[in-house]
Image (cartoon, rainbow, N blue to C red; front, side, top):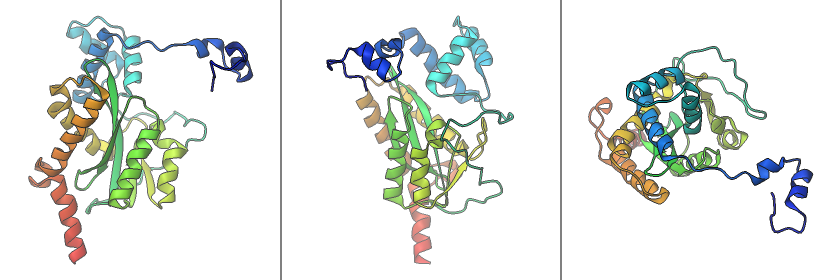
Length: 275
């Protein structure tokens, strides 16, 4: 938007675009090593105590010898894209142009692949930074249908994962997410509505059926992410992709009678086609 090589001075360009000069000249500071260590601890605590808000997390960190205030914890939680999970009145309003869809899974029995897909985003720590992981999951089989790794929380990488899942696996009857801004954006919702897919969203601060994606996050972090310290985004992408291939093809699940997600997803589909 701002062209620093243009003959028009930057200050003049900012005025024409109705931007403050401080915004134009601002250079984001990298996250300190101390904050990265705290964010790693917050991520682990959030997995174990998803109901904990900034105050409780602050107290838990202090018990571990970390001197930190509630506001600092809240700032880091916002940067990580996490919040406490609990029921509360839905007093928040969507961003302009963002529509909140009703929850469609109440009382629904999920009994076949491609009946319901779910999607969520998680924070992934690295050695000197962090990235975000988005995944599309078939709720019945727990199979990860598509995923993307991104350095920002923009909607684009979620749209890419969604489009890949639709291209490779057809489409579900219902697509469930939380009320994150990435999923309420018109860019994301338009892909679903164009495909004729019913959109379902959990209530603000609720977990409900996206618990299946939350279980995926717990598994991948304890079996993959926390055992490694990725040196680069490229390494994170490659290693996570390898793990998810193992997760789908070879890792048995107790909730699936010790079958793999691939066996359930493709096996049931094959049986249905034969019938």
